[in-house]
Amino acid sequence: MREYIVIRKLVNEGKFEEAIKKAKEMEDEEEKLMTLCMIAEAMVYEGRKEEALLLLKEAFKIAEEMENGFAQSLFMSKIAFGIAIAGKVEEALKIASNIKVSSEKVYTMVRISDLLMDRGEIEGAKKILEEAERITEEMHDDILKVISIKSVAYAFVDIGEVEKAWNLMEHAKNMAEKFDEEASIAFALIAQFMTELGKLNEAMELIEKIRYNKAWLLSDIAYMKKDVDLLQKAFKIAREMEARYEKVSVMSNVASIMAEWGRKQEANKLINECIKISEEIECEMEKAMALAVISHAMFDNGDERYTSMLNKSMEIAKELESYEKEDASSSIAHVLIEIGKFNDAMNFINGIREEEIKAAVYLSIANDLINEGKKEEAMKIAEFMNDKILKGRIKLRET
Image 1: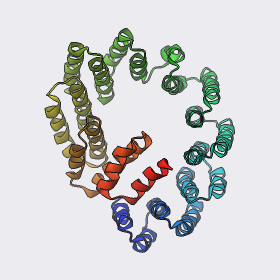
Image 2 (image 1 turned 90 degrees about the vertical axis):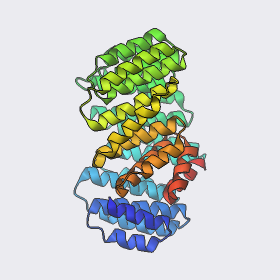
Image 3 (image 1 turned 180 degrees about the vertical axis):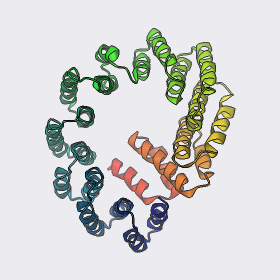
Image 4 (image 1 turned 60 degrees about the vertical axis):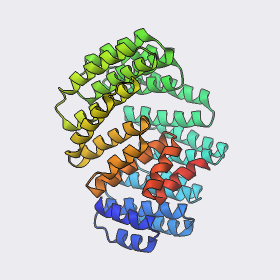
């Protein structure tokens, strides 16, 4: 990761030749491929498409020789998308069609269709999605099949084919009825899609078939229906969960909804209960994340304790190691941005001692914001970091 960060800095300084030289000297095959794809993407955004395509062809040759089929599929996906943004869509689709892992193949095709949709090429996007739909029918892993169908359905919604998307998810629901252990997970995925499409009654019909994420789904449906009784039901289910971050996250979300609905006393009661639960959480990473979401609920409820709660969360995160610090810091930064404290979020991330973790948190937050459609906030981070790739990704969404 350290080498990747160093090379990304060279790219941001416009030192492409030096960056490529260092990337080719990397010993780890997967890190080398990831870095070459990153450099090529930056070159596309800088208008150096022909050079980017040559670099991606080199990456393709390396990926072809990989023995790990899943890792190979991940990198073939990155290479295909890089070729697509460089303007060679047909060539990209040809590579995508040969990706070994079907779920990754579908994911790549959906990304390319999104690219065409952003360019206004709706018919081209639709054609790709129809082929992606056909591929899902050949998949054997039940959950990956439902996830892939769901991603295709979302893409159909984006191009205005809502009825087509709905029919796909109805098909997924019929399949899930025949699943065994994985049925609950499948129904949760399907109910989430239905909720986001505003099909609340249809989503409610699946609730009793769901064991996981039931409280989250109920709170989302309750919020959209403005149903206090349903929201309280979500809270009761959450209360039965194990004392971990997920439990506090759901309960804090319920408290925020109560606050928005003007039920301040009830929200305050829920917040205080969340604080007690957070004290029982053994994992320090989860505790830091729990305190961050509690502070969010406090902020929403006009509770001045949110500042001290956030500070406590930050102090815990500072003492964590490796990926735990990265995950906790990302959650805290997300909360700061969501409550309108963007500069505080940037200062918090900037205070992370380890350069690799700091860069990873910046990139994680920015990419999440891009995917959420929050381009303005994402661009602030891109400008703050002076990152060519992030800027390019945001502008790509605006074309």
